[in-house]
Length: 341
Length: 296
Image (cartoon, rainbow over all chains, first blue to last red; front, side, top):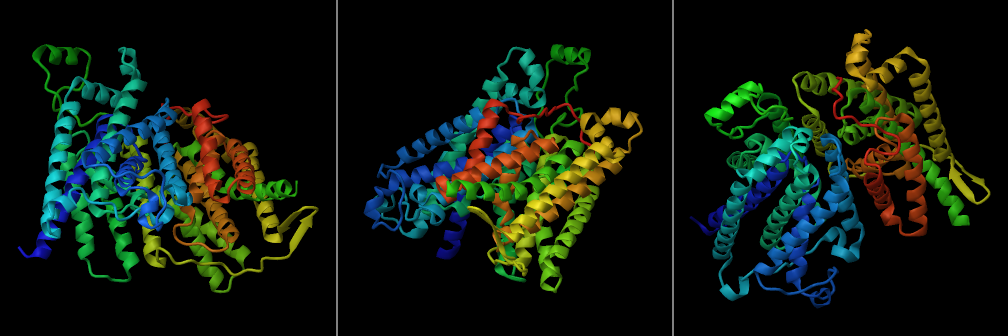
């Protein structure tokens, strides 16, 4: 492979791993827990900004071309961990305000408002996170100590992202196929019934929201370290929609499915569109990506709302099977995801 | 005192600008039970339709009528082609809000692709003379805006209160099966609600774009949030609540802009929204039921 191809492939690999972490965190909230988090992208952004502030050093040392609060130079894993903490705290704050007994679509709309307001505030308050220009020159971890060339470093960083994605995969599988995951699914299908069974629905919802928010921040943190810049333009609300499309296409509630969705939509569609010749103008090509994403969502919601890889249904033993028949519950293999949308 | 009075005046103008689309949003929601997140993009479409005819030489107030018609026709078409089929297909509330956002993103980006993402446009019209009331100075355009909003709100009131159609809308808003049982043609009334909402959105878009004086394909993004804030504040699904919400949002944002920092105008609307969500999650006067069916 030539150096350019290697750089391209390794960069794509970084994006894919970051997208994987993002879809898994969003799927825990939406696919498994049924919380349609239209503000997803602000938690990714929170992680990115945290990493920037914790590795850029004080604002004054950068020659004053960008201004932001705080500013430290902390070694590698600390900014990532701090990003997760910030993501969790922000989710807790938003969750406590918004997750109270709101109808699912109403909640989604409220979160969309939160997302746009967050962009507005960060853009307007130039002293907070350098306003519309955003933060740049975020140092890449180990870039000086390793002394690698750009291609080798890109492979190295893809490896780091791969390891983190693997850890997130372990966490995701553990959570999705655990009693906690089952409770989340039950909440998604019928939160009143789950409440009647004695589970604290509000607490469950908040937990899914906070865990998802922390992992989302981690994905943003890795992305910011790789592209070394982060600005309000990178996290406008349609970005959430791209992650959502990946989940709908791949199969909500199925970690393997949403990973496939991330590959097809977030890597596939984006790359395919960038290869199109510029027909009318640059704006048109950029817009086309979103038009395609929107259409794909509509087609899947119409034709195959359960996604390419349908959510794995739990196998019941003979006794529970009999009980399900008595209770007239849908048995294994029958029907799709009841009331999924 | 002077600042206070003039910001109160601007607050009323902002309230008028917000009230028209907020009532559009909330009225259509009360009938169809669909949160139309594509309303912002619809407004952009209507605003640009008015721009085309206005630049072709049509008077701005006639262009405003054109925008209203385009908005009404477009909303009904989208309902017939997308929302209504999805509802009959069995798409539930969560799915529906994804569908409306998808439509909004598709439409918004098509418009951005056609007119360019960062190109700015403006209508041509005579801004009129400035009229002073003591410390308060408003342009005649601003006065006409307030006038149009008052007339539009009055019409909505008359339609909802005194016509059979309004009665049918209120019936559907209360219960779809009961309305059906009474022989109300739910689909027809839902389409009428979409038409009224689209027309109001078109009128609101042109007035808003006149007020901002220059606009791009993304100008309605931030404004749509203020619209939602007003609708939620007043209790979503209640036309009068939306008017009240618009007044609260209009006055408080203008006062905050004058007294604190103009950049934080939209943020004040958000803080109000957060407070309402904390204290009364369903708005000041509303009752949002999760059992209600979609009518499309």
